[in-house]
Image (tube, rainbow, N blue to C red; front, side):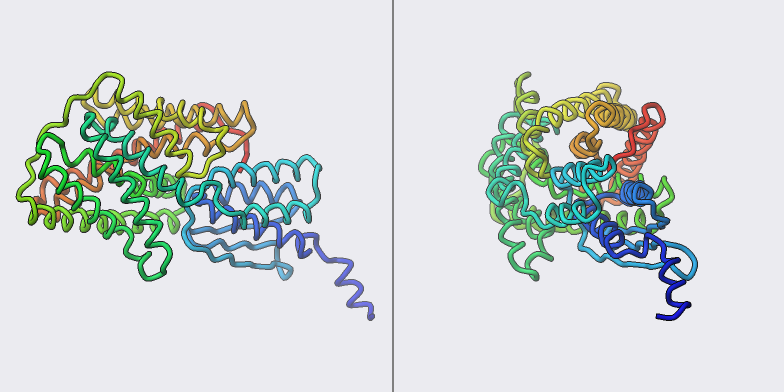
Length: 415
């Protein structure tokens, strides 16, 4: 071996080692799969690179991650491509634990990489039937939180089962999976219109919106606003475009299903919601928290914390209703959820997303955005545009509350 080769090898930088590059890339891919937003993913990856002693730069979108390790002529660039991920809090918590063990020296990079790959490849914590049950619990529980009474909750629960079962069936085939949003919205609205056609005392909108809550991209809309506000323009713009597209598909299905149902039973009157006992929202909150735990694949030990943050979010939105200012309610709710999540990190050394994601799901303006597009499709342009603007402002208010929470109570640097 000549002197030039010996000199090149002796000058090899630690980040050119395959084990480090592989660990960083596999961690980034795993974070993409659990739906981490750009600002959190890139921050987590930067922290991990610094812990490994690497010089690195990262660029992420909802479907790809570019990792550049090293500098100058020794720089290596990697691309991880992925389908858009969905929230999986159990895997996120397990990934955080692995990285904390690596940081504390309890495991080496090779062991960390093996555990990261095992976590990423693991099956969902809650299988298909429990996911369908999650739709039932969320639908039946959220209906009362959206202003419905006991009749609307009674209708939303089976409609949630239809939504969950339909999604599971359609996901079994690639071509069918592309039609999930409009087809499920159409089926739910069609069956809801038939129900209300035979039972005129049940209000239609609270029930079908509650059944479709897991499908609404309000969380993506709020995340897009957060990414845009933190300078991640590409990721935020693409996520915003995706949210608007999903809203449009759902609204199209909602209008089509309503027309089909009314063709069978005749016009469905927009009646007032049925009687809502004082205890029903509390029961609905417990039910929704249990459903959210399974929907976002959180560990069962986190159910109590999800229930607590759901109550905080509900109180924040209730404040907006009491003040007749939903924007103020969204801001206060976002601030409260953000502070709760950051305090949770400081006390437990676990990811703040365990509280942030379920809290924001109940606060996000998904139902408002869907109503705005449905109104537009019914040729009521002025009301539709006004409602869409309100949904956007609420998303901004939520984001502002979350950012202020990070200023008032900065979280630890965890994944």
